[in-house]
Amino acid sequence: MRRVAAHTLGCKVNQYDTQAMLELFERAGYQAVPFDSDADVYLVNTCTVTGTGDQKSLKTIRRVARDHPEAAIVAAGCLAQRDAEALMRLPGVRLAIGTRRRAEVVELLERALAENRSLSAVGELEGAAFEPLSIERHEGHTRAVMKIQEGCDHRCAYCIIPSVRGVPRSMALSSVADEAARLADAGYRELVLTGIHLSSYGRGQGATLLDAAAAASAPGGIWRVRLGSLEPTSITREFARQAADN
Image 1 (cartoon, rainbow, N blue to C red):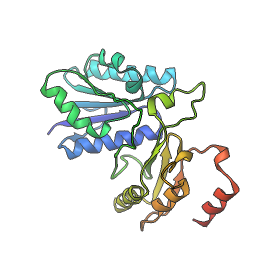
Image 2: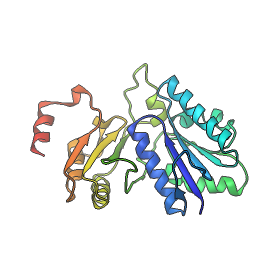
Image 3: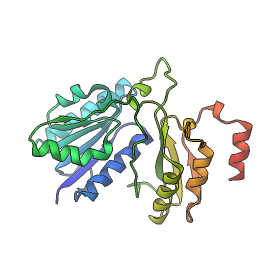
Image 4: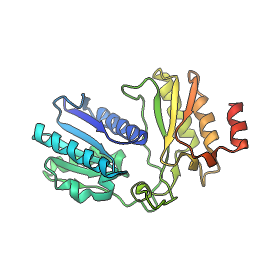
């Protein structure tokens, strides 16, 4: 059986994305193993929010290539979205995939391996929809992180995130409830709702973040729903009142 190992740099959103891609590999017949084990495929989910994030991402990929020269490396995430060409020049990198097309990660890697080449599959973010990723567990955690929102359009002068994550888009409320139910069935009692700009959840869909919290808490077995980082301006009196009612 082919083996896959994964490592996440950066935020809770990246943790979710890594888990979702890892489960895609497992459904395709791969065995997930610890990152310090021997594997056929190493998935490195990169970060570029700071220069330190860039350096750690590059260092991790170089270390894998040095220690496992026969393995295929998948460089995913924000640094791949920003500078796939730099990652493709690193030894061992067979696939660069940014913050789109992650649901195709297994298919794209196996195509690259079958054609004996390296492949950059970084997609444009303009017009992107919310990507249909999902998880059934959160390995190594007693509470599960659920990514329900992607992207930001505030474009603060110091922040690169809008250019590597795109504009705000959200998971459908029905999908929030479905994923929460799967995680409850897996034994999780606490969920953490997260996103790139969580307060933007539901924009253009006629839903709000508190609607998502209600959907996540609906399945039997879910005892607590936490919300990820929110700006102070998001916490209005009405928000506090509705949250208190849940």
